[in-house]
Length: 399
Image (cartoon, rainbow, N blue to C red; front, side, top):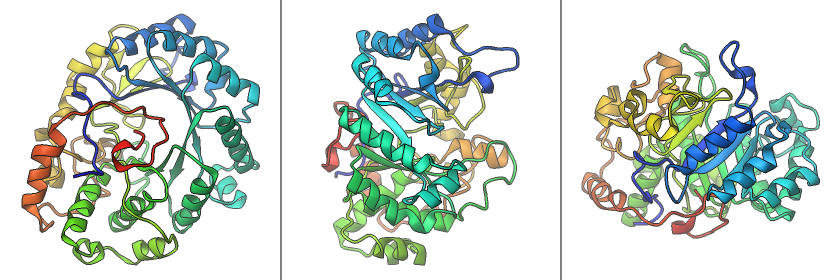
C-alpha cells in the first residue's frame, strides 16, 4: 500500500520537527525571549536527539528581525540540524536576507497564502499589499534554491477559492501545499463557526485529490490520515468515495472546479499529539503544539530530549488509551487520534474527541483491510526523507 506515511524512527524517541517561535511578546510576563547563547543551546538540544536530527523551524511574526539568525542557522548546519524559516507576518523580505540564510544552510521557507487574489488574501490578512509581498518573496526564495512550502488557513471566507489556490500553487511552484485548519485559542465556542465537521470531511477529501497536481498535507486535521487510508482502500476496490463516505456537495463543487486531480498525498505530522512534533515558545517553554498552551517545562531548566521523551504531558498524549469519546473508540486512532489542540480549545480537555471529525467509529466497510494496513504498513519504519525535498511520487513526498 502506498500513499500513507511510514515513520522513519520511533516518534516517541525523536520528533520529526521542532518549531521555535520567536517574538517574545507571547512569553510569560516578565520573561524575555531566548538570547543568542540560549538559542544556540536550543539548537544543541535539537541535535541531541540524534541523527537524522529533527528539522528545526524558526517561526514567529518576523524571525528575520533577529540579528543572530544567519549565525544560528550556520551553527545548526555544523551540528547536522537543518533549518527552515516560517515568518507568519508576511514581512517584505529582501533578496539579501534570503541569500544570507540560504548561504548559512537554511533549506526552506514557509509562506502563507490564503487567497489566490490580492483582494481576498489581503482581506484575510488585513494587510494591504501582503499578497504581492508573498509572491515576490516566493519567487526570490525559489530563485535562490530554497524550497518553499505554502500554508493556506482554510476558513469559510476562502473555502470556495481553494481550487484557485491549488492552481496558483501548482503554477507558481512549491515543494508542498498545506491546508491548515484553525484551532480555537482558548476553551470555549470560538472557532466553531468556521466549518462544520461534514464540511471538513469534504475539504479533506478534496485536499486528498489535489495531491496529483501538487504535493499536499494538512495542518490541524489529523483525521486526514484516516481519509488517506480510506481512499486508498476504496480505490483498490473500485468503490465511489462519494457514495461510501457520504461526501457532500461541497466536495463535488471543489473537485469539479479542479480538473486533473488524483491521489498523491502526504498525511500530516502528529502536531499536538506528543508524537513527532515539538513547539518551543519564545521564552523556551515546551509544548506539544503551537495551539496547545499546556507546557511540559522549559529548556532553560531541563533538556528538550527529556521533556519530549518522559514528561507526563507528552507521554500522556502519546497513549492512545487516554483518548475519550469517538476518538477513544475509533479503529483509526493509531494513525489519527484527532487534534488535541482543537479538543482542548473547544472543550478544555486535551483527551476529548476531535470536534471537527464526522466519522462514526466502525462505519467504514472494509474493516479487515484497515486492520491489515495498521498491522503492517504503519508498523515498519523506513528511511527518512528530507522535509523540503521537492518530490512528486507517492513514496517520496516531502514531509
